[in-house]
Every structure is written in structure tokens, then in C-alpha cells.
Length: 575
Image (cartoon, rainbow, N blue to C red; front, side):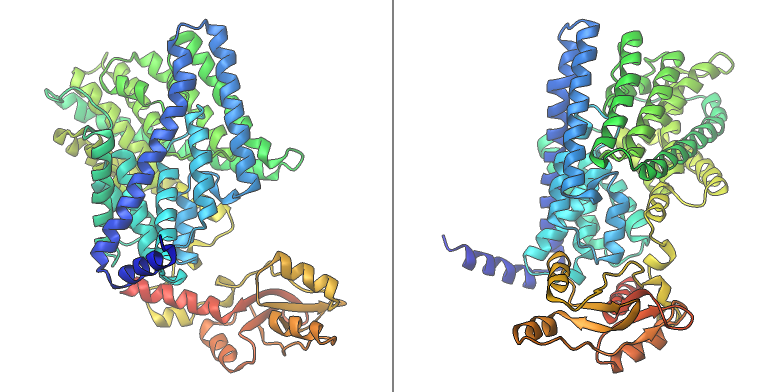
């Protein structure tokens, strides 16, 4: 088979195919990948922790066996993350959002592969995290890579990343409508985006793949909800408020642990995720030995489904809530590969179940009312953490297929959004992005070209540049091997001499001479894009040095490509 001719034909077809066709095909690819990730994760969990718990092992045999599983999985995952793709740690949604806006939707294939393996090992191995965030990252990243492999330029892959993310989330939860709104609300940031058509088609494809391989049933199968009395609606604002506050405290704790974890230097990074795994095991074993429940391990959907059916005592729900809260915060904060979708739903559901059980002694709440309050807790906790209100309503509706839930879900979302915006500035993902050193105001471009021209150099410059401190070939060649850039600032004896081009250096050393350096273009962090653009267009080099007040010391660099990339993002946003 002539593979070169086949690839050429495929690329030609892709370049000429309508947008609807390419989006649908990317949705299928992402959907199959999401289902594969789902199956791999559940396979690992079913043959390890779940089988040990159900096979008649003694409590102590299960305790030591589960410890061996969770530590081995987190150690392997930690090594993969450290060795090959540190960006694959965590949920994946903040990372995909950064890639969408800063790198035109480009995600390296290496990150996708490591995310798939490490995520399946982490969540399947029992760590208290969810599969939905990694699924979005994997599916969006793979769709971006496939489009690139088929000839799409790097700066045109946003549509592919958005389509893949929607398909992945639709497949993960079997919630195509919520997948559409989540991608547009959280990643794209515009419900009226030009990406809407592709996101919609890809989401449908992801749902169809899930229906074909996993079935059409909703994520949570519960008894039909009827006979919901006024007491349930009266309790809804209280349950929503408490669940929202719980979610916000969960966010604070996760990010505090994550920040503290990064400051720990005496412990190797590859070993840190195992701390979260060990804490999950401690919390999970305490619950299992006393209540014979596995809800702390992995996603905990079996115990959550029981709570939604009203089969969980409020004391049991409260114990599961406390253990899951601690286990998930430590698991996420120590750098494990997993998301917070499932944990926030679990926490909110157990909060609603516990409060419903207590309020039942005061108010005439029916069995259906208890289910409604548990789902209200899920919606409020998730809504407060993620702050995607439309997604929260649609997701819980699609996960239960109960139309009577719409009014209480709308009430829960209203209260959760009010409380969240009063208590915290950013949602969970935005806070992670800022903690990673990205400025949200500068990352997402404005809608108006005049606003773009008034943006300052500080919003796009790199303040950790790679510099050459000697023109000796031994030093220069090491820099060239380590970094792929074409231009490097030259600083000798503390003074900036100029810009060295890779091609000029290679030719000069072959000829046995010292390479020439290009003259400097100085700018300041306060200079506007409009002012700098004119300088770079007229200069011999398209790289400018960001200097201090007197232009004596280099503090960063910025390129014409940085400006054009930002401008391209603005144009795409305006279309």
C-alpha cells in the first residue's frame, strides 16, 4: 500500500471538505477516544479495587491489596507526567483553554498520549478524581493533532480543539447539550461563537458513539420523580446555598494544596501524586471498614446513584462527603491526573442527601423530594465551582432525564451563582490558569482592533527568555540543541550585544568566523502593540528586547509573531 499517496489524498480531501464534514469526522475520532478512555479506566478499576472488594477477601486483605494498587498506579502515573508531559497533570480543562487561546488550539500528541495512560491509571487505580476533565483534554488535543496531521496549519486548529472537546464531554457524560454549552461557556467564552456549528456536530457524534458502545441510558438511573411537594422547593435555596459554599471551600482547599505542593523542593515531583493516592486510600479504607462503601475511591458513582435513589442514610452521606472532600483535595493538589467534575457532583449530591435526611424530620419531604434535593446539591456545588450556569442545568437534566427537575435546578443555579460571585473572583479553572502564571485578561483577546492596539507589551512578552552568553561554538551549539528557536538575545559581560540568528551562526562557524549579530530593537513593558508593531516591521529582526527604564538590561523579549498571533485570535473572536 502506498501510504504517502494515501496521506496525500486524505489531506486533499480534508482541505476541500465542508466544515460540517470535518467537524463530524473529528467528533467521531474524539468520541471513540473518549469511549476508549472510559473503558480503560473502568477496566483497571473493575479488575483491581472493585474485584477485591466484592470477591470475599478479608478486610485486611482488601486494605493491603488496595494500597498496593493505588500506590503503584500513582507512582507510574507520576513518573510518566514528570518524564514526558508535565502539562498532562491535573484536570486538563485549564490546559486546553490555555492551548486554545495562546497556541491556536495546538496540543502536542505526547501530552494526549500521556494524559490517556496516566488518567486511566490514576482514576482507574482508585484515586479520588474524575474522568471528565481528562476526557475533554484528550479528545480536544487529539482532534487538534489529527487536523494538523491532515494539513491544517497550527494557527488554525481552534475549531478542531473545540469540536473534539465537545465530543469528548458528550461521550463522557452522555450529555451532548451540556457539552455544547460547556465548551462555549468555559473554553471559547462566547455562546454566539463561530465555532458553534462545529461544536454542535461534534457533540452529536460523541453522543452517538457512546450510544453505540455504552448504551443510551443516562449517567444516573433513578426512580421516576413525582409527588414533589412544596417542602422540597422551600428547602431548595438552603440546600443550594450550603452546597455552593461547600464547593467554594473545596476550590480554596484544592488550590491552596496545589500552591503549597509546588513549593516543596525536597520531594521529587514524580513522587508527589502518590501522597494524594495514599490519602485517598486512608479515607477510603476508613469508610470501607465502617460502612462497606467504595465511594471515596475513583469517581464514586455507585454510591452517588444510591444516594439519588434515597437509599443512603444522612449520617452515611455525611461521612462519605467528609472523606471524599479530603481525599479529592489532596489528590488534585498533589498533581494527580484527573478532573473535578465527578468529585463536585459527588460532594454536592451527598450534601443534598444529608441535608434532605435532616430536613425530613422538620418538613414533609417525600422520597422524590429527597432525590430532588440531592440533585439540587449536585447542581449548586458544580455550578459554584465551574460557574457555567447553563451547563449545570442541562447536564443534570440530561444525566437524569427528569423534566420535573428543571425548576429546582434553575433555583439552585441562581443561588449558587450569586454566592460564588460574591465569595470568589474566579471559577476553579480560571484560578488554576492564574496560578500557573497566565493572565486571563491578556490571554483572551479583546473584540475591537483599537483595543488590541492599546494593549501593552507586558501582555504578550516572554519574561523568561533564553539568552546566549558567549559566542563560542561549544556554548552556542548546546543552546541550539536544547531550544528550537531561530533568534536568541546575546548578552556578554552583562551587556546586551544584539540578536543572533541560528542560520547565520551555523554558516559563520562553518566558515571559521565569529557570527554577526543583528542590531537591537528596544521596547518597554508599557509600550503599546500599535507602537511596537511599526518598529518591528521596519527593523532587520522581528524580535524586540523588553528593557528596563534605561534600556540597559534585558527583562524579556517579544516577537512580531507574538503580535500577529494575538491579532489573529482577535479576528477569529470577532467573526
